[in-house]
Image (tube, rainbow, N blue to C red; front, side, top):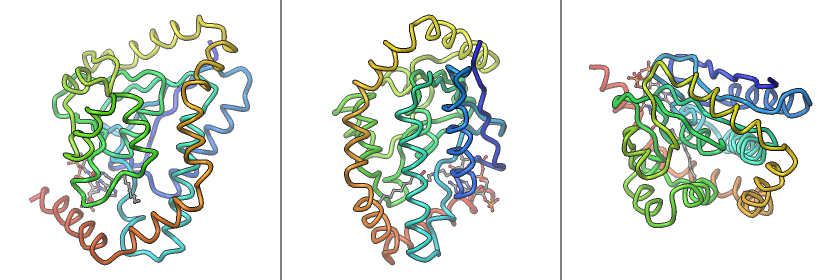
Length: 248
Ligand SMILES: CCCCCC/C=C/CC(=O)SCCNC(=O)CCNC(=O)[C@H](O)C(C)(C)COP(=O)(O)OP(=O)(O)OC[C@H]1O[C@@H](n2cnc3c(N)ncnc32)[C@H](O)[C@@H]1OP(=O)(O)O
């Protein structure tokens, strides 16, 4: 029925390394250019993890040129996903913090597995970093200003039930039904004529995408100088140590 399933596979946690981001963007571009494909189901092949978000090791201990290159690719993937003409449905079958949540938010519909161990949200402030304006814009578009304001400041990671309540996801289903539900949602969306659905999507999303497009270079500069700061590098170091210690 012209539907592709994209499975993220970058063990152990599907972090979005530079290589992973680049491959993702290229695959998406290929699908976008394949006229037989009308929809994509985005999911993960890593057990229990949808995506751990941006790769912290791409943002820690590197040089400014690397940070700039990395951020340019983060922007590129986001723009492609957010403005895709295809129907995107995410089957969120695991934890989905920060950049993982960002991927899901780009989709037209989000189905999440009902497992309280899986959380989702933009938790950047917990890491001592700040979600950029275009992450924030998409959050506001999805859950409204007040909820986004609170969730962004607190770095809230929502359980599936909370995520459903606040509107971060559209549906929560038993874990073994995530993929079948994503497929049935896709079938419903495929019944809508492409041209009217695409024009409507574009109307809803264009202003948010244009907001980044018109200041991409400044956003890269801003990221590079922010992430290069000693204080921010220290925060990332502490966060990485905390992740290690968690293992015991
Ligand atoms: C204007 C400036 C703007 C700046 C904005 C920058 C925006 C950033 C957005 C982001 O996406 S930042 C990344 C945020 N991600 C997280 O906070 C997730 C952190 N990870 C976790 O919470 C957990 O790892 C998990 C995903 C819930 C999985 O838990 P699990 O117990 O299954 O695995 P771990 O033992 O914790 O991890 C295994 C292994 O993977 C490493 N790792 C985890 N997450 C990342 C990551 N995002 N990047 C790189 N590496 C990661 C972890 O350190 C372990 O490594 P080890 O070597 O095996 O110890």
